[in-house]
Amino acid sequence: MSIWEYANPKKFIATTTPILPWLTGAAIATLVVGLIWGFFFTPEAANFGASVKIFFVHVPSAMMAINAWAMMLVASLIWVIRRHHVSALAARAAAPIGMVFTLIALFTGAVWGQPTWGTWWEWDPRLTSFLILFLFYLGYIALWEAIEDPDTAADLTAVLCMVGSVFAILSRYAVKFWGQGLHQDSTIAKVGERDPLHASYYLPALICMAAFVLIFVALVLIRTQTEIRARRIRALEARMRA
Image (cartoon, rainbow, N blue to C red; front, top):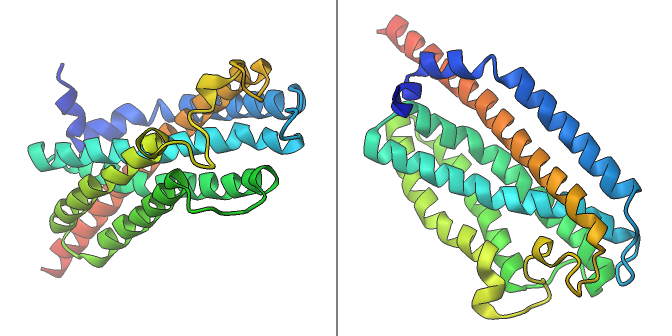
């Protein structure tokens, strides 16, 4: 069996439909467990107070904002090389989800940053690159909507995705490229290592991260199925008009 068999729209829908209920249930369960554990059963951080609990939403959403764009890049490259429509539609389906994750990361970062840094926003390298990534998400979605021919839209958005990947990389490694700004380096890697965050944060943080991954995968599958069906409807409408 080849993985490319799932590029067939019928095969993709037939395979993913029975998985979705289990995937959705696992996403909800892990999210509930992670957030309850993190918000109610971990101590406050000495330097941050209660505001540190937003860590359990901010870090997973920031992680998925970058990883969603990475998934879009892979799907776009598959489209450019193999011309499989499901991959192009999957990239399109992932964009609004990634944009929402980016918006959540920016908002929760501001809420966490205000009591920590004394400001809602700072033109820190990581924050700035994250804001630009959000604008790339908006541009990607707008470009899909602006072009009527789906293959042309897939080609142009694939190019935009490749360009935007630079800012996805910068969002992840800005601290290493430009040195320490207001935003610290990887938080999860430092939990318990002379870090103001308590070691008890580690496991609930990992559960929350797993929950966000499952949520992303479930939503991408649902939206990709929707995009496939919408493409079929447009094709039928075009035949009826011809």
